[in-house]
Image 1 (cartoon, helix red, strand yellow):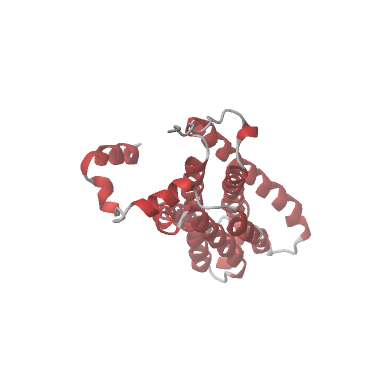
Image 2 (cartoon, helix red, strand yellow):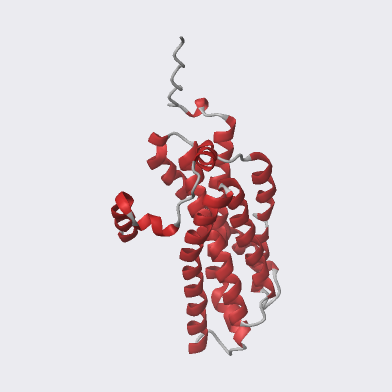
Length: 244
């Protein structure tokens, strides 16, 4: 009887399979567009809120207050989105959920262009943040389940480069576009945010679900629930990671 050979350990980039490369590119591009989407608002926040409020100038206290509310809603949505789409990723799969997160933040960032009041802008930014926070969680899970385990510390650093390059990209695009726009047209920079939606079609066609997720779906009869994270031997790990 022949013993099956152990899988070859991957040590170099050229040893990665095409599905691994595709999952890596999808996650990195998702984080790149995350950085772009989250920074667009900060670049045009003051003049845009001045226009939405009909304020005389940026010195109006209401401008700072409403700008802060909008940014706070974004940060809350970021946190909630990580939990919501992270859970959805367990149910639907990493690739499908990754596509949903990108579609969510791309479309809702584009909808910011249509905001007529400050609270409408806040609502669109909140929903966009759900997608951004979800992409961080699902993209990281996708890489963790497809790329070599020993590479995880480096993968976290590589994903972070995507965010920072996205922020730089947003700054460069806004710098180029604003001089071309008429006065009080800052809202149109949010149309840039629709571009990542094109990534969704590629993800759904080219990025397969991780084998680890498929095996778990087939082998587990009863799916664990969120409260199970706080029970038994895993509870200690959950509380420690949450605190950190």
